[in-house]
Each structure stands twice: as C-alpha cells, then as structure tokens.
Length: 600
Image (tube, rainbow, N blue to C red):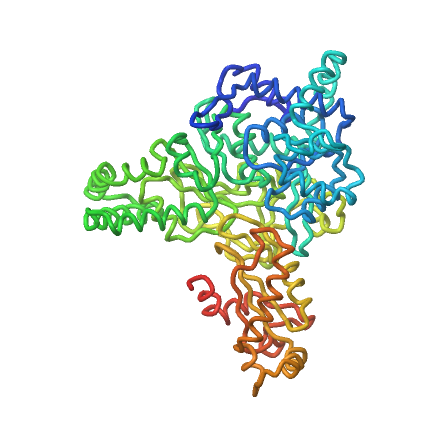
C-alpha cells in the first residue's frame, strides 16, 4: 500500500511521519554499512531546502544535480523538491560541453555536483552559464570558498541559520506545491542528437508509483533494493529513490559496478532491477562457472529440466508432476546455491527494461529460479508503459499496459500511449513536443508493436533511430555520424549499438576525396575497394575516429569500426531520395560485418 500524497513532497512528508526510525538508506563507509533513517533523511533534506531558499532559489526554478548514486543524491533531490524547485539530473559520464548544454538550456541557477571532477566540468564552461549563481560540492576540495563554489556542508549550515530566522518559509514553500507542478526535467537524447528536456510533474510520479506498486505487490517497509544504475536515468530514480520513499524500501548503494556482486551478497535484495547487459553478465558468468564445475554433467541435466519447465510456464501450460519434482530437487542441490552466490537468495522477482533482451538470456535467468519480468516504456511516460506482473510472464512480450493507460496503434503499427504518466512536453521545444504528442494527447513511442491474445505488448520493431545499448544508455546516432562525416575522407557513417555492449560504426569512403588523398600520399590502387583495405587509409580513418571520440562521453565512444568497400547508393536501397541512410537495410546487408565487430 502506497503512502498517500498528491505530490512527491507530500509523500515524503507522510513517509517520515509514518516511519521516522525505519532505515531508508545504507551506504558502505570503510568496512561497515552505515544506516540512515527516514528521520535523518528528512533533517538533512530540509537543511538543503532551506539553504537553497536562502541562496535565492525560487519556486519553479531549476537546480542541476550531477553525482554518482549515493545518499546525498536522494537527499539533495528531496531538498530541491521541498524548496519547490525542479531537479535536473545530469549523467556523470557527460563531457563538459554536454554538462553545459543541460545546465545552460535548463537555466539552472544552482548546480549540485559530487566532487572535483564534476565541479571541473561546470567551471570549465562557467562563462557559458550566466544563470548559475552557486555550484555546491558534496565533497569539498581545493575550489571551496572560491566564488561561486560552496560545499554541501556550508549549504546545510546556511539552511540551519535560515530556518532559525525564517521558521515558516519552508512550510510555506511546501504548502504551495501542487500536483501539476514540475518535479523534474530529464534530458534524454533525441533523434537529432540534441538532448531534449522531458518535463515530468509530481502527478506523473505519484500516479506511476501507485500503479506500478500495486501491480508488483509492494507492501509497506518490507523490501530491500540495491541502487547502482544511474539515478539520472528515470528507471533507477523511479524504482529505488521514489519507490523507496513511497513504499519504505531499504535502499543500499552499491560502491561501484565492479563491486556490485559483493554488495549484492551483503544486501540480499528482495527485488532487483537491471538493464539487459547486467543479466547478460549473469548469464555468461554463471555458464562459465557451470562449464568447469566438478558436477558439470549433473548441472547440464538440471538446466535441461529447468528450461523445459520454463518453456511450459511461459506458454501457459501445466508442468507435469514428475518434471516439477525433478526441478525442485535440482533447485535445492544447484540453483539455490547459485542464487546465493549471486546475492539473489531472497529476490522475489527481477525486472529488465531500457533495452531489448534476448529470449535465451530470459529463459536462462528464469531457469536459475529468478522470476525475470520484462518492462517497456520511455522517459516521456515516466518510465513504464507496460510491466509484466510477478508470476505471469509471457515469453516475447513486455507485459500488459499499466492499469488506466490507453494503448493504441497508428496505421503503421506505432505504439501510442495516453495516461496520467505521460509527460508535459519538452522544455523550451514546442516543435519536438508537437511531434511527440498527437492532437488527442497520445504519446508517439517511436516503436512498432501489437497486443497478443492475452493483452500483453509485443514490440516488433523500432521506428525511431535512438540507440539503446545493452547497458541501457540512450545514444543519438545522428550526432556521432555527423561528426564522422565532417572528415573529407568519409562519405557515410552508420553508428551501430542498439542492444549491443558498445558503439561501433560502418564507414564508407568519399571516392573523390580519398583518391586525391591517395595520389598525394603515394598510395597505389586500382579501384575504391582497394583503398578500403589499405593500411595507410585505415590509419587515416582511425585518426578521424579518435578525433571524434575526444568530444564524446565514454558510453558514446566508437570502440570498433569497419570501412566498407563501396559507398551507399539509392539504387541499392541503402539511401532514401533525400540521401538519408536506411538503417534496417544496411543492418541486414552488412549483418556479418557488424557481427565480426562484436566477436573479434
């Protein structure tokens, strides 16, 4: 049952009143996990809220937040909202230019950053950020005290002093917050490459939390969850932070992705969220251990039996008693121990979202005894459009629509969704907003799909070009491709990476430019295909790729690339009449080339 409240602030206030001594968060400091109760959470968030008001942050103004997952992220976010302001999360992996775009476009007046590295990104572009009045650093460093930098400790001191002299100011601000007020603007990559600010209200969040919580069967203060996906992504923020406040979860913060496995063993979450790449690592890691196990033959038999049971369950068929008993024995002997090794011994279910996941991985994880549920949605509808209910998975689907959502399909099969979780539009971008929403208020997903006979959504294709890597990172390919095509040697570039562990690219040569270059550099050739394999040409292209990578964040960098022997043409249906690349055609035609980039 959700804590009542029409705004996130009201939900938080009611949670603190209801569960002041319940542990809200756990963080590892040294060798020990330290607890933070909801009472402590509230005290620190109110200090930040009062501090922001003291700095002059008005109701509805924007505050950027740039940090890894840690208690201060949650505390700062709640503090921003208590002050009636709007949180603008920023990815830690962003470059200084990308950070400046988000902070500047949102017109944030304050930026709260984690440490000196993130501070440096803001200070490097400070001349481009005229609205910034203060930069608050969670971990004070050498720049503390230098205008406009202050420490989070100092901000909280300001808040305590302000509360003493203005005891009613924060309550007045809290009381002024309405469900229709903006809670956050989340910048997500668009197909043009320029990040767009998704405007989400308090009501968008409260409706989604209530609906998803009922569907997943959360009860008050009974869940543990580990926070490790970026909080700047709506998936983690909705699930762990605001799910934690709404339902009283105990939220453990992973030390890092490298230490996730050890942290999972400590936390023993009751449910787990992940992107496909996380489950793929579970899959490859467990399979590798099984292959070299002293009981490998027994494990192979156990897996065969478990996978048969999974197939029957996902098809909605009855499992024969003999197979059920056999699987129960194998689970006790083998799979229960594997779940303990993974830190999943108490996990009731796991959710995968943010990118497509293969059937093979889904079945394997379920064979291990984890109820892996698929979900589907986008930032523009606050995360979920569909969620698979626990115990009711159907293979190849991403679950039924959330209760209360309207789902329909346009003539070309595009998934359209309407409901209380759909965003208010893109910040300062009416044209993109008009393109994303139909006249009657349906969100155009950019994906193609259909409902099966049980009312579960099957996503069959991606209409939009946005790349979602296996790690759940949203990347706009056009911007990267445009940078590659700035090179005079490159004619066309197609960035690959949807559902993949990293970004790669297919590149074609500009025949005129490269033949001229070859003549100038004494490179002999008979035809263009000869140059596509020439070592000197490849070195020149590598230099161009490296140059482009310098301006990209880590997740956007091109890790591997291939020069194709010929350029794309309209005749081969690789280009449209307006010379746009046909991605699906190219992906099919050069499928073998693409696969080689991911196996070598």
